Image (cartoon, rainbow, N blue to C red; front, side):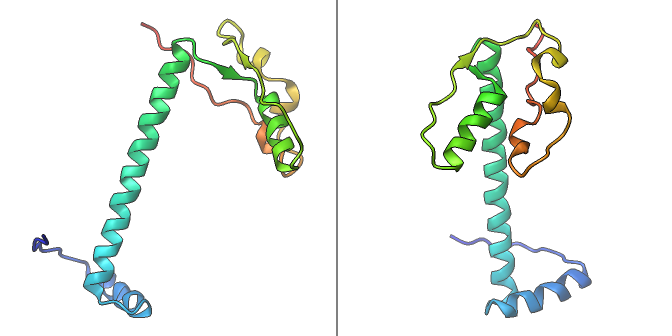
Length: 130
């Protein structure tokens, strides 16, 4: 069931919406409803993504499986080239190591090819203090 609401728009925004709606064969009202629905869907996806990321971080903090970035990059390159590559083995968390010890120097040098972004420094947060 639809409910009526009032939305005050700045004049310049209203003027920008009219031609966009017309280009899609919609009324400005229908275009705004679609835009609001799209934003709600994006906000829901963002919220789910953040919740999943926090749950994964908690799982890692509790001793969950980790994968070495170099091995994941090799696996992805193999998949990209349609080569048969075995999944990388899980690694124990090197929490005692300094970031420089965990990341080879070539990772910190920056990407040199289109796939070198896969070798970027892992963006893993340290375990929480309890």
